[in-house]
Image (cartoon, rainbow, N blue to C red; front, side, top):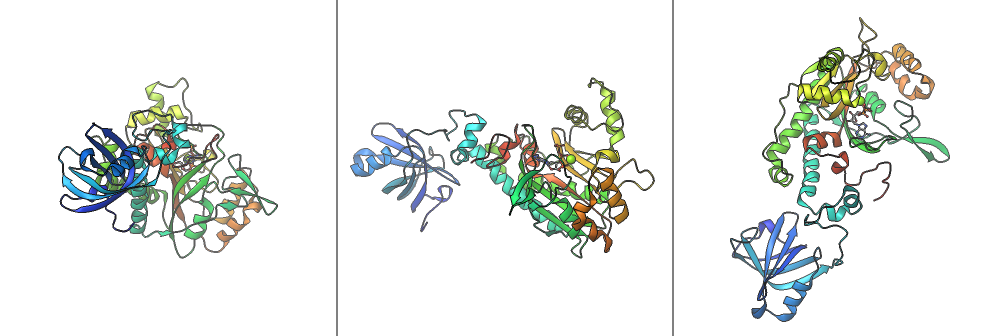
Length: 434
Ligand code: ATP
Ligand code: MG
């Protein structure tokens, strides 16, 4: 908008035009204040009723909360105002009125349940602590991209409509593709491997993944954002180094550039960047640590998947981000490589925060015969995956990588109770719009 000044930039001694939402109106009789809010903050607009044009005063004070208005006038110092200045209007225009009945109160004075908030996201994101989450999300994704580029990665985008799922199974959403059955992709796994095997070597993607998770949990979405990484000539240790670099870079960016947002979320005091040497313990060590606490009803044995409860017990024990390595081959997917000297153990790893799993990765099986055998062992038909396996016959280098849930990274970083808080328009069992 021509000549518009942001609330935070309006300086005393100038004439300015500001535009934004009516946050509140305080009518004290002879004098009234309208607080105008925009992306940068709030500014006070002063109405001295006796000294101003009646029509202007009426238009200003009749504007309902959350209406969009434009105000032009002299900016003067006022230490009691939110930004230390106030504006006395010479012109006042309502650009878009708001209904007096709001389904949600953006001033935050009245609490709303998450479903009401998600139904009315436009109003919800007007709250500073909600706006802060999405500004931090943007900063985090920016830092992730920059760090991948520093690591020599090339950003790719791969299809979300696919003929077969990555891991087959029940978590696929089927769709109709010109009369043929197709699916929404669960993960860019197979595609990113195919490109790591090209001369591009090191790739990353930030994009949607679709999972038909049956259950509503605070850490599962049906459409999530996956941060994916894959590199030729990397082993699983180097892949873990990259995951560590990405997580710490995300925290560092937020600590450095998002102080205001952390304040809005009430996290400014306690926010800390984790050390970039996350403990790496083997699956067997993890089982032993959990069993030693005696906090679970049963004793975990080799081959058991770590339940949510077991993950929490371990998280409490370790108290920060940690890798779990050397999983039993049977609980990891077919594309993960097993150890040469013991085929019952895989190079698969997870990176977890005490609250939840953030990353799964590993070194990949790049040998054609072993890969095809792996499909059969997991009850999958290798013929359906020929577009993928064929490429392993033409010089597929050793490679490793991982996938990280962007919303889980944010939910753990910002102590959000529910992962849906980190998504503008979440997709879950009940929610298909907005
Ligand atoms: P979980 O066991 O917690 O359901 P997963 O092991 O099925 O996760 P992976 O297939 O390993 O998930 O996917 C890699 C990463 O993608 C996970 O560590 C997680 O951060 C993220 N992710 C996977 N599924 C979801 C989901 N439904 N909602 C949000 N994030 C997800
Ligand atoms: Mg996993």
